[in-house]
Length: 546
Image 1 (cartoon, helix red, strand yellow):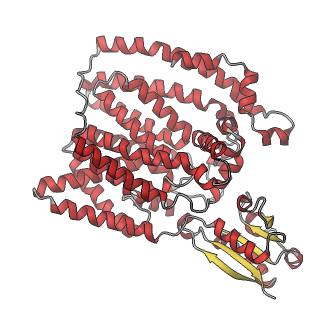
Image 2 (cartoon, rainbow, N blue to C red):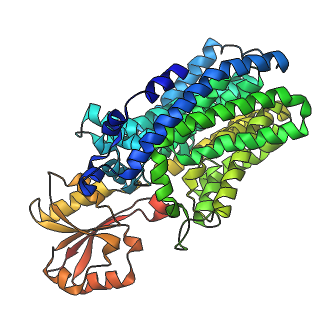
Image 3 (tube, one colour):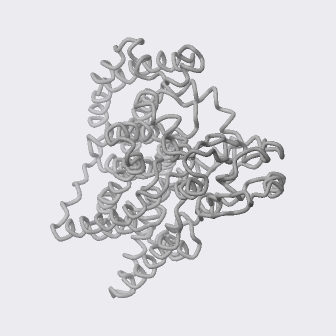
């Protein structure tokens, strides 16, 4: 890796500029933005630092092995062929569940991220953070997927990286569970993550959250292997946490939680100094690698730092609906009755974690990451969405698996945990079956097109980005964008404007705007339910009455 980073550091600044510059930003300014140029200079510097750090890492690790040896724990035995077949079956079931929703309409953030990042290629996605919707590594992979598959099936092309990451979580969770307590724990944990509604839904949207989940599972496994004395686990861990942070900044809570755990265990258990030293080395290497990977984004991040502060007072809070949904998320679903059985298992699993040292280690690491996030959000007066805490699904799934194992061990019968598992899975699958699409923009556009035709214009009432254009470009109708949920529409504009309106987020439209639309004679021609923002993802089509 040292040679790779050194080679990248030697690439001329002009070459990096050509690769990373965003064409829209250059067109607007007439030149490459200063933040892009600063990011490239910082990138070359930090790539050099990373090259030196990776160059010294093997020597430091060998010295630690001589002075502070860690007894090497044998690798988990290879899974029996029958168990591996079951893992394949569970993975196929997980693929089927995800495939059902893979080609639903894209929702606002998916289209906004594509318009601002993925549509312009891999380099602009990796080198610009002018829009908060950019999950850099995921956006770059989505850009490559879009270029490979074209726009004919854009839903599939944009969602393919997230889908593949979501599917990969299933065998990855098997490996983590098996490293903790053998094949049975691994198989149950894999089944949980395959069927859990939150994991399913985040695997079928063109955002970075399924990749955050995957890198959390794999980095947690590497963290565990470091404690076992695995030599390659240190560099593997460093690369995984760097890629996780490259995907989404909230992933930083995972290694920060690990750091908190390392400090606490080093203070409480001085005999674990050897393990703590290796953890520290892995964290330091991961930190340097992360800074090198995200370097082009740092100037944009600093310029937009105020957007991470809750200035308006109406941002999502951990003490509001997002905090509540984040809690339900631990039970596997954002629907309360479907989450309840899973939450009960998590509670029972916590009692089991005191009996399983390795489960306790992983659970405490996950909880520490959650504590770090809570401190950062509250202390930094920031904001949070429930999906930001998706990394907590890893300890939650493991605790649910441990609870089912604990029930079997305690009662010494197979049917109680089997019946419990059936109840949990039934609730999860029923909640998925009852859930509408996240935001059916495509269906709303289709109805508006049937009412107005392909040549006549329609109002497009929504937020700042006119995302409906994704489904009208080249196909009609022509959109007249009314941002800020139509707040700028007055009686005169409505009187002479189009007779059909597409409204995204209709429940957020101000009462004054609704009154003006009513006065202009607009009536609801169709409403499509969406579960986005906990039931506020509906799309409405209005038509002026004759």
